[in-house]
Length: 486
Image (tube, rainbow, N blue to C red):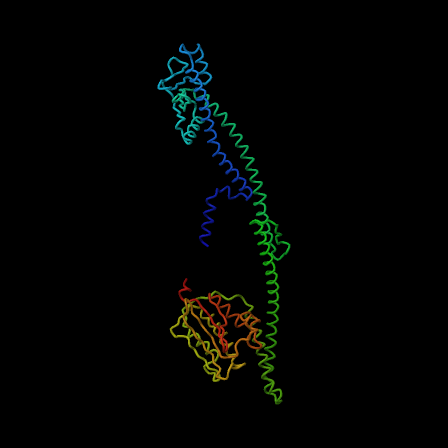
């Protein structure tokens, strides 16, 4: 649980503080705009860099045409002013080409500029380098000196280079970048809105409806009108709606049932309390019947007293079961053989001449358990066996015998309470450990087995009725010391 909390805290810290305060729709809109803008940035810079490369390639192509015109000129040269018009058409100060080892030059000036601000070699310029130079052209002011551009040539020329001013390039680049930025913002906005509307309609809206329904159901979970009505969607949200509807229906039914049972239990507790007092008074008065001279009354008086005693015990057991839940066991190292001996003494088994009791728990066996709760478990199970043997006798002719055995299992301690009585009827086995439904003895309530099962489960163990040919054998499995420590 701590790891889940730490991961949640790390997630909340990693998100921007302002974003965590927004609703789900606002978060979706902000994130959609951010991601679309990020995608546009990734497209925007290469597009501007590609425009710069194409602009320079266009100038190189025009320079190559000028070189071809220069190669086809007669020996006396071009007419006066033709070279300047070629250079003006290209937009360059000078054009140079190497054809067949000879260098050809066109220049507006008699001496081309010797110094340049930078050289751009399109033959070996990478995309990252092109983006970097494009950003420099956009951000930095244009250089006073011209730049040299070198590119591949066509025909017989080896290469073509030209010297141009950077200002026209920067103006064209700024115009294209501005236009592209406006288009990118427009496309980003439209895309973000479209994605937001689609996601809000398909995902966020249904999730908000789910959250609203959960909060409404929390206010009045017993109201069937608060149960969500699932749609026919076949995706995960549709599955979540149907699962939530099933859970709400089940929970609402359980709450209504538990509320009725709680009200019924309160009424039964009050009735039992008053009934116990009346039965106790009747028992006190019936004790005087044993002193009467009427033989018939004296013969039926013990049965009446015993019946009243069972009724009082039933009321007492019902009130005890209806109290608060059992406390969490406080584990201690307990000698199991000694604990069994103490419960046998409480049941008077040592002085019982009609029943044989055998304590076969090893004296060295130590069990980590709550001694008070485990004593109640043993007392209930052993009392059930004694009552079965006393009331119904043995399954075969022989001395009634109650045996308690214990042994170390695989990572657990196994305790068995066995008798040679008539066994557990088949009709009682299905609800054996349920209160008021799993009674084994006639007139019993079944609370003893229910309490024993609850206490064993609190210890992390299990209780069950083992198959046996003779009598009843209850097996109690408790975690060993190693498992309890874990």
